[in-house]
Image (tube, rainbow, N blue to C red; front, side):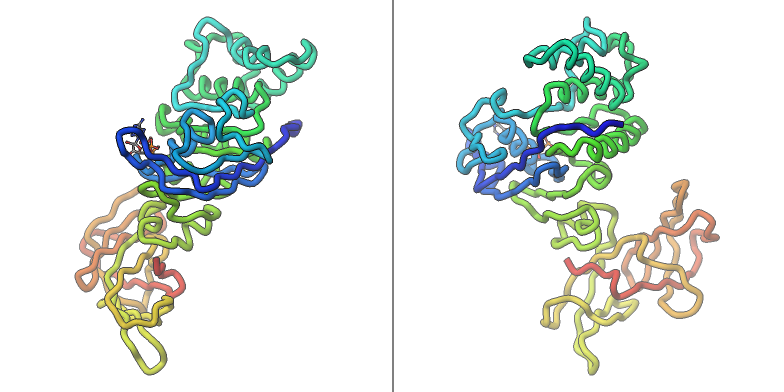
Length: 350
Ligand SMILES: Nc1ncnc2c1ncn2[C@@H]1O[C@H](COP(=O)(O)OP(=O)(O)OP(=O)(O)O)[C@@H](O)[C@H]1O
């Protein structure tokens, strides 16, 4: 596949905030830089302000304060059509009486490029979005996922410098969503176009993002690569919002050889940053609790759920509930007494 020749632009968001007329503050002042060619995902629960931020980058909403730059151009006062952006919405608004190729051509006709160039671009986009076979179909003859692919192709046809996407997969069913999520991830790697993508789905964010910005209540909680966000969440909100996690009560105690993390049912060397002796909560991913033969601690299995590629096990030890993921070939049953092990470096101090 030919690489796209899109001219990527960086985006700078400087002190941008938004309070709506009715007094609702959707966004506290935010600073954010999106590198040229970077795929940045804004991730957060409903109402956290991610769509508002995206809409302000698009020019569909005006910031209460702050500036937005695309490349070295201050676009804060510019209308959407002057910003060089392509916007893909949740609902793919295709023209119902136009075929796939006519829908895609429509975007190009708005620009003044030659017939030959238009044709070449159309072929490139049809191939890129796996639509070549479907080029003569009408939207009604396409699945939801195919329609969304046409919508994306139509936006790409306008040669945007920035791609903005607001929950583009939300309207699709689970299976299609998973499929298109992978296709989009591959597409972004080919395109190298600066993209800001909004979703509340952390699996989608992980698959697609170069960098994830986790938002909550109008502020940025954390910004980092998918790996950083998952493995090193900086707050309990991020730890719990991204992926499955156990929240465990613990006491930090002093001991001769340094502080100890006492979970009640098990003790580990304390690796947190605070020096205070205190009651704290720590976090632990289900895949970071291991079945063992000898050492470790004892737990009682309360429930075993088969999830195809693994079992999710609910166990209890010392009054604390533990969710554990084990391989689907593990022999484990409700009521079993099992030995478990936790590694100190897997404890998340968020
Ligand atoms: N036009 C508006 N007038 C007043 N309040 C608004 C307006 N648009 C959004 N809000 C409020 O601003 C806050 C942030 O909304 P926003 O749509 O950015 O959230 P979101 O994170 O994208 O959520 P969702 O995933 O549900 O779309 C919410 O409290 C919302 O109710």
